[in-house]
Length: 360
Image 1 (tube, rainbow, N blue to C red):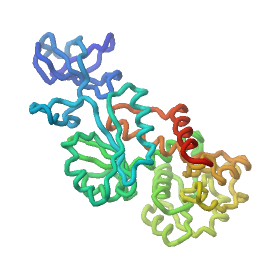
Image 2 (tube, rainbow, N blue to C red; image 1 turned 120 degrees about the vertical axis):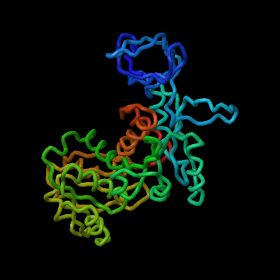
Image 3 (tube, rainbow, N blue to C red; image 1 turned 180 degrees about the vertical axis):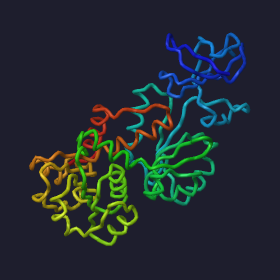
Image 4 (cartoon, one colour; image 1 turned 120 degrees about the horizontal axis):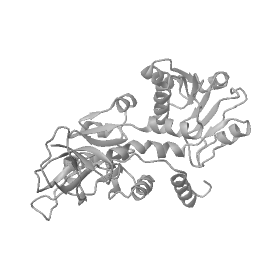
């Protein structure tokens, strides 16, 4: 049934799943309701064309069918109104994702939850075997499951296929979908902290050839940059460059100095420079003056590489924002709200890092 629903003077198109005079679900893109699904009662038959305007009493928000799960205490299987998402890993207690998503749930007044779930590799099949019955709306995936989860999904998106890893899961048309948002997190952070960095950028140098390097290379390729991947084991960088194609090349680490002269962006994706790890030894003297320097490491927040770059006048980007921005798409899938990465959120995580990590 087609209708217009009046949200206090803001008519918007919607639809009814029931008959006049009876409780029904009202489907509407109301910006005030993250899921756009209400319970209400139609007061009259609205079959006019164009659709009539219907004012209704908002009773309760209900998730769509894929967010329902049976209540073990109720044989009728009542609808659970609070969507549940997770972060899946082993171990998982260290994850800051619950703090991040908890902040957004509170900020947007969403009745939902985001829970850490520790699942050993041997138990992964059992976890997905009861996935629908447990009522999960989706979640994040971290080590060691980013590759192993793929066989338990109905499909994966293009980025996950290209990157060979899944970090986000959600329901779509009754099917369980896996995606990878590390690359959007990489770009979102860069766009926020160094706006306009890609205005005339053509070349990037990426240090490393692991998972973060794959995300960075894919992201930069999507922005049209040519990428030089440099790694201690040159053959690994060459294989990764061949995998992506499109102007990417692989090099040994001793080629970095020569490549920096033409680089508009330098990215470190290795663990060098992280607290407790050896420093990253890179001479920036040949780096193009207007280049931006990005380190995906965020403990410490300002690494030795970023300090050296800042001292030379380069714009710098730390890695914390990559964690924040990669979470945006997942939250939108699970809770129906596109969240904002705010200064308050960033400060919240920085305070937690410093409180729990001496020297950060």
